[in-house]
Image (cartoon, rainbow, N blue to C red; front, side):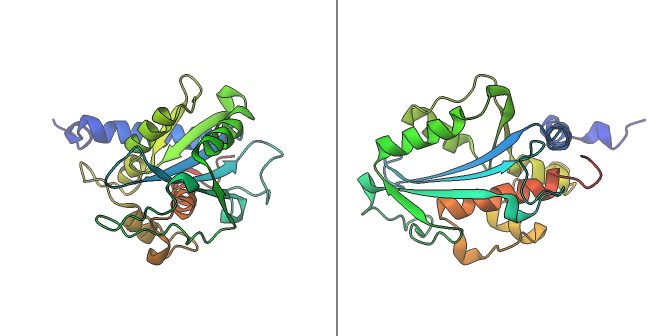
Length: 219
C-alpha cells in the first residue's frame, strides 16, 4: 500500500524535516536567529548596493518583549546602504527601493565598513548560538562569501521558501516569492511597496520565519 507520505518528493520530505528542526531550535530558547538580505547590481553582482539584517534573540532573558511566540517588536532590523555604489538603482527585474527602509534609520557606509559591521554582529555571539535565515537565499550567501564575511563553521541556515512549502502543506509545490509568503501569512506591517529594500526584506523574512516556526506551547 502506498501512503501519502511515500508520494512526497525527497525535497518536500526535507522541507518538513527542516521545519521540525527550526521549531525545535526556536523552542529551545537558546539561539539567536539572524535574517540577512543582500541587494546587488542587476548588471554586475559584484556591486553590492544594500545589506539588511534582522535579529531575533530568543535566548532566555534576552527576548524583549519577553513573550513567546515573539512579537514582531522583538525583531531588531538594520539597513546598510553601500555608498561605493550609491548611484546605482535597479529597475530591470525589480524596482529599487534603496531609500525606503521603514523600520528605523538607514546607515550609509563604505563596503569595507559594512563588512566589518556584519562580521562584528556575527562575532558577538558564540558560534553555536547563531542560526541564519533567508528567503531564496543561496545567492545572498554567495555574496556574503565573496565579501569575505566569515560564517561559523557548520552554521544552521534556514530558507523560508522551503519552510513555507512545508508549513502550507503544498506537497511538491513551487517555492513562492517573499511577497506571496508575507501575504498568505498576513505578516504585520507588510506592504508590497516596502519590498526590495534589503532592511525591509530582512524584517519580513524574519517575521515570516517566526510565524511559521515559533509555535505556541513550544517554549
